[in-house]
Length: 503
Image (cartoon, rainbow, N blue to C red; front, side):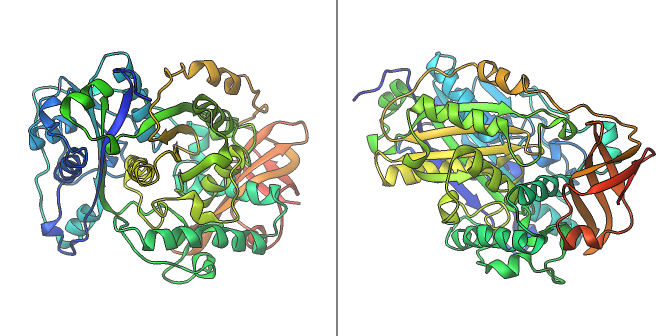
């Protein structure tokens, strides 16, 4: 079957990983992205650089807030910096928003732009040089990554504030503090004891590490057994219960990826071989209730369920027809909840990742899922007609993007996400109070550690009146990690922060 001339098609993908031990020899972010960009153009089999009319860059960590500023300067226009390096002169230069869902969201948006004639040849790039940056700082090196441009890039998508002041006062600020709240709720919903829960996490993630060990683009190619992942040691200290260092995304990586997209008409004109072409058959973009304190619960995800169902229905594909899958895996619970909401079995966890996951393959900031897309494209090429699927996640299990891929020609006009987001927005949140007093029950928790030592617990609870609240615990932390406590009675007193204790 031939495709309509405006049908969008992915024609080139590439990945880059830097393994240089000498930070003086490491690439800058723009140089790394340009390396991946040249690879994607070459992968298409066409001389396409001069035809690129749209170049989109995934936002760097250094431009994603104050947590990881670059000590070596910044780019005024990162897409322009990449375009200049590869000899392209795009009409549109776009810088994506913050969020790990961004790469798949950008593919969805660019596909729509191509289908409607707004773009003909588009390049998406993303990556991080955090490994080089950290090593250079430690060595006392000075780089100049400042780069001017004639103008600022255009923006794409709205920025999201993931926490309010009340949540931040109670410790809901870093992903390492927040995802364990979902993890402990999920374990309780599964009926697991703390010991069994940790064992299940190890069983899930050990196969991910084995996939990474076989992936030539993984930053750390090492397979772990299940016990080694969950057992606290000096090297594998607890970050926030139940997560150890080996269970959280590794952001100190030198990794980049690129995806080249075209209209079918442009691919024909530029001579892209048929065996390079992979099509986006279904897509969706959703988000949860933005604030963690407003979530419906902490063991499920209505937005993943609805978004994945929409993308699969658009492609007319059932979950059991998917051959190549990559689920976002910044923390184990992202995989656990996504698999449950999408309807994917977890008996063979290696079937849920193509890269090996963010803790092992590497987590290059907002750009990880660009590697997942590159892997899906290549696997679909190698198995013509098979279905590939990407789930990308951003924020605190907040924003989700989905893509269904195949070498079979086809594309359905992108549905306005607001049409299915409305169902998520309509789900009521529990009532909430910032000044709780009295008794209730524990809804979920985590114990935040510093250098492996427990410091305080973040508590989400429900008063007997039904109101949800946030609190902290500064004593009695060990019992939280040793026996099932979710659902147990507690007492809370208002303060700055609110303080809770088990009864």
